[in-house]
Length: 87
Image (cartoon, rainbow, N blue to C red; front, side):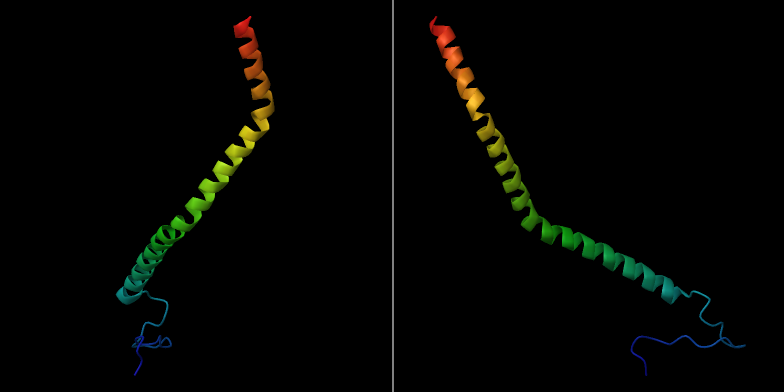
């Protein structure tokens, strides 16, 4: 006895064969599509908490690097503004 279901029989007078899709195969495809969609949603919900902090840290690190690179000319600009304001 098969647990999966009846197997596909060869084409004969009484059996249509494997070429015709039955309601069982269409329902199986729908169940497979629903399972794949649920798996994709679960993957997104499970992966996102691990990747989001890494992405935020990368953005923060990039912002700090830009500010560090700009420190020289911003400091000179600030000194020039203070000197001009005292004059």
